[in-house]
Amino acid sequence: MIGERVKKYRSEAGMTLTELADRAGVAKSYLSALERNIQTNPSIQFLEKIASVLDVSMDQLLYDEENRNTGNVKSGLDNEWSKLVKEAMDSGISKEEFRQFLEFTKWKMNQK
Image (cartoon, rainbow, N blue to C red; front, side, top):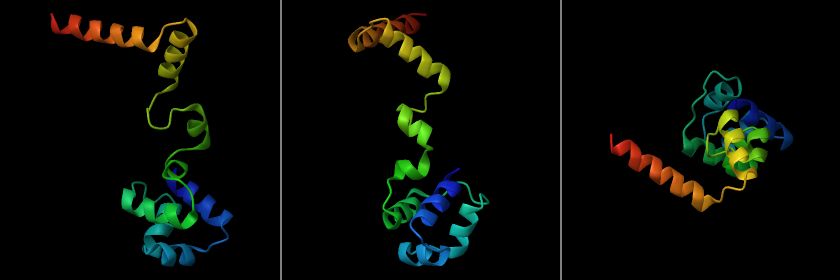
């Protein structure tokens, strides 16, 4: 959860809730609720302020380390898609061949 990561990075930076809230210009009560997972959908602007003060990237706040390291951060790939893509890559299919397959599939679906 985002709140757990915010708390982790805040603790690692040696900051209290009050210090982080003051430096970031956000409400301490909202920050506290986020860290306790009461609030779970903070705005991008809120997270940008927090990330800046903590000197971490937005990805570090939004995604756990496993997803950042596997490259699935922004793609939203679940494990099954990741395995399928890896299998295609391992089989020697080029990106261009894959693009052509997708285009053909789209074309074929539009013909129905």
